[in-house]
Amino acid sequence: AVAPYGYGISSFAEMSPSKKRKLVSSDAAAAGPSSCKGKGKAPVSEPNAAASESFSSEDEDEDDDDAVSLGDAEDDLEGLVGEVLNGEIAQTLVDEQGISHSAVEMLRNGFHPELVEDDRTADQCEDGAALAEAGDAEEVARWLIAPVPLETFMKHTWERKPLYVSRNNNKQYYDGLLSKKNIEDWLVKKKMKYGVNVDVTTYKNGVRDTHNVNDDGSGGADPISGETGTADSATIWRRFDTEKASLRVLHPQRWRDPLWKMLSSLETFWRCSTGCNVYLTPPDSQGFAPHFDDIDAFVLQLEGKKLWKVYAPRSEREMLPRYSSANFSQGEIGEPVLEVVLEPGDLLYMPRGTVHQAMCVEKTHSLHVTLSTNQFNTWADVLELAFPEALRRAVEEVPALRRCPPPDFLDNLGVAAQGGDEGEGDEGAADDQTSRRDQLLGVLNELASAVMRRLPFDAAADQLGARLMKQRLPPPPSHLSSSKTSTGVTASNGVTNASVVRLMQENGARIVIEDETLAVYHSFENGRLYHMEGGDDEDGGDDKEDDDEFGVLFFDQACGPAIEILLFSEDAIDTGVEIGDLPLWPEDVKLETVRRLVGAGILAVVR
Image 1 (tube, rainbow, N blue to C red):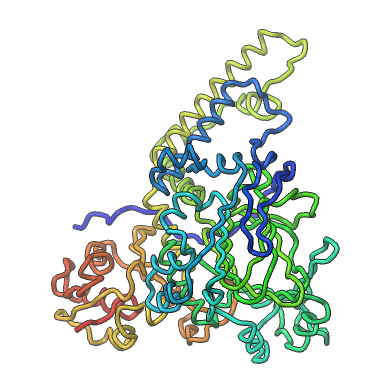
Image 2: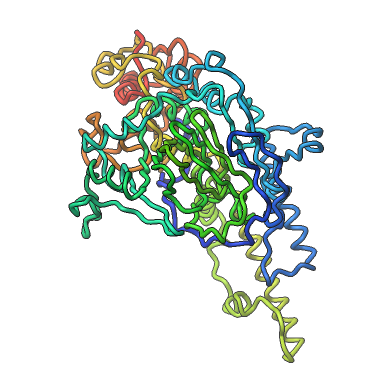
């Protein structure tokens, strides 16, 4: 008999965005910007008065000591999670530069951007394309934000304030990622569908409009299916030249290898889905209204120049949001904390919730790529996965949760029972009701504690990892440990007990327990054109039956220890594992397990 292998959540479910939450407005930022027009040094901006105020509502009781105490504790909690992420910050930096683990504290202190001049010339810089080709994840992340050390960025900047890196001495830093000519070629080849691959937008007189239709009326969304048509090249460039319309190219990593390799490397480093959009803007125009995003954004300027205005989050409730904002009017955002003209080779990093807008300068178009990461990758997402399973387990194990509430439950809880001005009623009756209400709330708190004690954090992490496997780009061939010929169905047919197999890519698979079955989620069958959204797989990935699921294999839990060795041991990553040494019997089950992993592209046959 084999003991159950680990434990998990009963079924894997994709996380789909819910309706956007209603975002709370506050007074706009009032401080002057740090100006970098003309690439000059920027003065330090004054603290943002509006951002420095914590959010409060009219009906909040400012004299409530318990509420104040709770707020202080939650501020401390935000610093704690920052310390877990970033490590200890030297006290001298806290005292002299105001560096803090807390994003809230950084916002209250003014949301000051960090401004860096990269004095290196091209021959002094790493070759970013070569690093991405090799799939060296950490080195690609270092190259992206250099000369700022990666450790310094994570400890002092990540999620807490904007970063601007100017590269006057090396404007070719991001050359080769993408060009306007690439977009022209995709349009000529009729590869781009409105809303899936490209959006055509204008922002004039405070109004944002989308123009996803061709001059002859084709290409718009079908009124029944919602499907859009192919963008016409002549229409696109007429709008670009005469109407000052901008192009947003969605997820160009589908077709552009340098972006594919860079994003695949960064997904390995960040350990979360990482995508990109490209923005092409005609001279002296603006394509989008002010807004904030639900992603951490790295803006890489590729061609031309663009003036960016960056604003602090309007309130603490809007910082690090899980959903993007609607479009703002100019009157809703106040004054920027940073104005900067991005030129080729420059970088702008903005944490989630940073309000921003950008406009192209005169006489030249602008082309930039925005790398995005950390969408739905928060502690809240972990708990969102854990809570339902904790409740399910508690209901099974705690009989008290299956008892009925008393008949007077609805009389003592709810809006009407919360208290307030009781008028001239019977004080004794009111006291009795308060006592009964406290009693019921005490029971609910104890029941909630029983649920909390069963939170399955390991299983929630596995679900988050499985989601990543389904969302990731497929690894480029140059990122794999072995050639494609050593893996796949043909290679799997030659597997014997004497064979040695090796993992095709480290961290390319995740074990999850679902309904008492061991599931292996992986990214090796993912298609580039499915990354992030839409598109058809060009690589022939449509040959599975409709009821088959890409990217996941299911095994009996008895296979767990052997699969762990195959996926996570040092030998599996380096020299390989001899199948005969695996702790799995009978032999036909062992061979079938390995063959399935080889057939899916997870393992390669070394010999």
